[in-house]
Image (cartoon, rainbow over all chains, first blue to last red):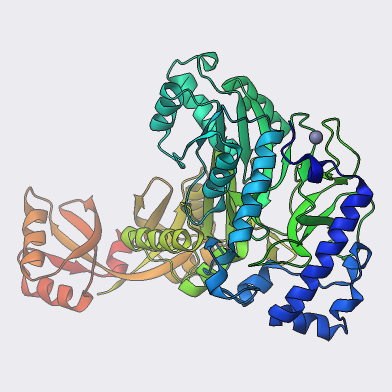
Length: 432
Length: 143
Ligand SMILES: [Zn+2]
């Protein structure tokens, strides 16, 4: 079934016309309502009238996560705060989060796109959906919640964590759909196995998994262990949250809701568009959002776009599962982390030269982050308690900045490999 | 009175202790006393050397995190209860011991001790000549 056949199956030409019309409106609006965009456009001598359609999209300036940070918290909003119905936030690189806002219409748009995703994944009104994404500032929980309500499914807003309770509820309430991060799905699967429960006795049939990168191997393992169809959902809070794109039952690329979010793929160095079928950095322009419209927002995710009509009947452009990042951002337990955040914590403490190494791993299906810090002579104390308190202090500072738990390991100087004077900062053992 | 102790930060991995001792050995530096304080992941090696400055330089060049710390060495009679008596005196004089390690030499027990206040410790020991005495660096190294 297709939730919105009109918008999801329109011809390429109709889609381009709709996108063009909405793009022009958006550019007009941001030029007048967001000083940041007006200034950026004036700097390159661009007026709203110069954008006559989607063919002019590449004349527009880019927006980056840094721009959101520099204009923290509401600087890029295009409506007065009285029109903002909700905010969400994600952790940022300098301790400050990135704040995103939604008008009443934005919440409706978000519910609509998530409803499309669920419908494409095969979720129906009669389903019971267990939402094990975190509820709160993170967009995962509430995003899925509103879309599920729109579909008319029965929502269990259990939020993340508390594995035993998750399994109990799953059995007793006969949940048919599970929504969470793929790594948590695997974690649950293993807990179910350990409890001696046969997954066939569960009622699960569909999984809506996203908020972190995962592989085809993980998909197979989850599908086998939980006895369901695992669907990949993609999104980022800056654009709207989960629901920017989602797989259909073909599981062959994620359909982008491009009537709301126009996708492009660019070469991260030259910033020119890459040709169809080539890997590039995913860039979105939101064309219906009111509170926080973003022009050519660079996501940092690498993917390939495919404009061909899908077997499911949708004409919506598909993106491949993300292939990595054009920057050094890590996604750990659904949280975006930049190595520079850890570097600035260490520098601010002033007790260590920031020679550090991040070791990311997936142990028992949960992402782990270990931070190795070289014990430099400047702060080497010959008393264990001083070293222990140093390591506890580093751990505390990093955790309060990143919002996830980490393990800190003190290592000997020169343990961390230097290349051309710079250290290799990250070892990601997750094989994503 | 003060003795320079050389401390080295060591990760708990094989071969590190060998490398330290070999480096010192190659330079003809003798280890008079040694102790290791360890946690699950790392340890601190503390040593009294015949030439602490030379040892410091050599290990630093090898990339170890090293530090010279002033400690004291006390000698007590090598009889049951002697150490307890000495520690009791220090404690009653408000001296808290950060760490210590001991070894016996003939009739005497030698205790390397690190306290928060070296001068106060020296004064206290000197005032209790019957229970303990201070040993100089060269005395330990000649043992
Ligand atoms: Zn499809």
